[in-house]
Image (cartoon, rainbow, N blue to C red; front, side):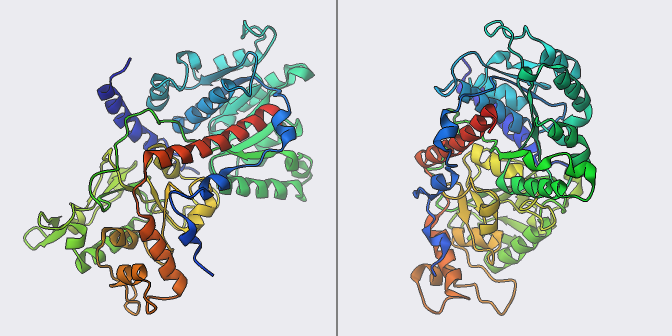
Amino acid sequence: MISTRSLQFTFALVFITALFCLVDYPTQQGSPLATTSPGSTSASESLRLQSPEAEQTKPSRRRHVAIATAFPYHAEVYGALAWAFNRYFHSEKQAGPNSVRIYAEDTEFVSLIMKLGLLPGSIMHPAGAEGLIADVRSTILFPDDPGAMIDVVALGTCEFDLWGLGADLLQAWDERPIDKKFMLVCGTHNGKDAVWQPKNLAEWSKRGALRLLTISDHVSRHFKTRLEEWSDSKDPDQRLSFFEYVKVDAFYPVSDFTNFPLPDKSGGPKVPCTGLLQGGFEKSRRDYDRIFFDLVRLLREDPTGWGYRWSDAERKYLPDASAPNPPFVLHLLGWSRQLLEIPQELERVVVKDVDLSMDIVIPGFSPDGGYLTRQASSTIHTALENRIPILVTRAILEAYPHVPGVPSIVRPASLSEMEAIGLLRGANINAENPSIYFKDLGYLATSGKHNCVGPAEFCEDVRAMLQQGWKRTQTQWNQHLESVWKRNEITIGRILRDI
């Protein structure tokens, strides 16, 4: 039995680790917003992948899963995948002997979910090809299931793992009799890493033994497009690799911390006071220049609204004890800290550390990062896991369809992230373009005035954002996360049934 105190300390480490464990790791007409509210069921409905009755009743072909990786990141992805398989096996949907095994180095994240009882303590096995390949070849691995063999091999980061494991796995596949073939589930993260794809996937595709597993729908769409292009290629080697028959599924790596003592946000300040921007301190990944620029000009407009005062002596903004609300602090978390310099005037506003009690997650995606087209960000899934609402636009909702509803605070794209937070705090904001007058935007939007800013739909979107607010109840989070896990359950079922 672990104490609440030790769990909280462990979670502090794991929270940081999970944010460092990158999905986006360094590599080669009314307003639609007005209908979205935390209490609506639209989010759950959008996540319901309707599985035909024939699929639901089709028996599982596969029962023994090996998840393997030699990549030092993505524990929060393959750990959640292991939990999802294990959860499925322990439901009424899967009878008979079954197993889930992880072949990877020990990580804080997987250790925590084992301590929380989400995974059995026996699930971990040594990383590396030797042990994995020996077990893939074994026919005596499961005493309760004589003759059974590992029949699903899921690679945590296929871009990396296929280089080291692919040849041995392919040989092991070829050695098996026809009724004992395993399925290779290729965990793919970044569509930009194109060099490895056709050459390394072709032999598996030719054998009908390959599935791709992404961590968001927009990445799935990217890979489906690539597969279609290869299938119709003028290059006969690509065209005759049968890529059009490769199935692509999306899995949302969100583990269950329902029973973990996460901070209670129901009380406390009425305005958001802490924001989190996570990712490498590289401007190609996060739009730090835009964030800092906006903060500086908005603080100059209304420092008290942000909880600060200007100090001529120190040449920076300092917390203002007389302000009506506590100051807003933006926490930055990521790798390569030395790459990013915080402007002097923001040194007390922006800090390179993390607070366990975050109010809002700010994606801050760089326009060149590809986070809405070819790769998914760990920021989204970590926010859901830790039950912190995410400041999003319609484009983000389209790319990450498991986010609408409870997890999202939806801003119109014409309103920057810092401007949106300023409005949620009740601060006066100014527009970057002096011809657009934002100063009374919050009042005009919420009061329904006809002389609001820009098109009527813009003010309707602002009104919807302010009415929605940023606080969520645990019941709302529970309901939404159950819908995410239900969607994952359908994906797991399709993999095990070969459909």
